[in-house]
Amino acid sequence: MALAAVAPDVLLPRPFAITRYVRDTHDTFTIELEPADGGGPITFEPGQFNMLYAMGVGEVPISISGDPAKPEKLVHTIRAVGPVTKAMQAMGKGDMIGVRGPYGSAWPMETARGNDLLVIAGGIGLAPLRPAIYWGLAHRQELGRLVILYGTRTPHDMLFRKELEKWRGRLDVSVRVTVDRAEPGWKGNVGVVTTLIPRAGFDPVDVVALVCGPEVMMRFCARELVNHGVSPDRIFLSQERNMKCGVGLCGRCQYGPTFVCKDGPVFSYERVSPLLGKREL
Image 1 (cartoon, one colour):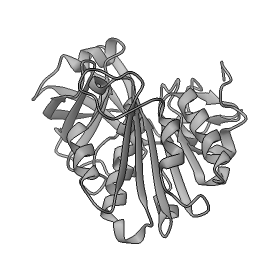
Image 2 (cartoon, helix red, strand yellow):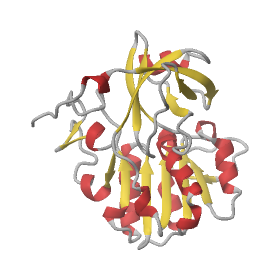
Image 3 (tube, one colour):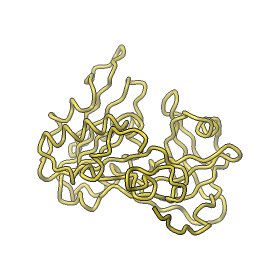
């Protein structure tokens, strides 16, 4: 497979300063960044990602979790799982991070106009979906039902708890949350997020479903949606595995005939369903 030519500057990170740091859970944190090179902000579409560089440690792909209407606040929510993300976890306000992007495909927000919008997130998958939720709230009058389903391992692993409560308080948004394992004081639903789909209340014919989380969760959610009458071409998943360069140059994220970083990370279920669950792709 021939590789496309890549302009050198797309591989050069820009310096950004951390202007706000929030610890979300025991292993997840959110940072807000502003350009430190005198350049403008990075505009993006919901679902896209940036390559974040910890100086002297390395680079990782991280989805943008902020509001696309407020690009001056570049927001990323990160789980500390490796050397680079753990180095970023140890940073604070004023520290510098290299940023290049945005890269990748976006959630099909224009397709959602005039339809129900169903958002299904598992764990940290809520972060790449949060820009789509912001878009949905900003265009609420142009949508049918707006439904958010969110599943986490435990109540302590829940992201954006205050925002979820704020959205739940709106009369024009339906929010349902579930946990795999309850803890003392938890009064909500217990079970995987697919158990919420039958009670979600959306029109299976006129819905656009956005799904992000562990691949096994997305696979079962997509199957459940199809079982409820949703067409595979109206279900969209975010694949985020094995990305390295962000521009389809290194081939690390080849996924069947596509590259996740360049052709994805957002794919329709119709397109990737034959590949889901297969290893070493």
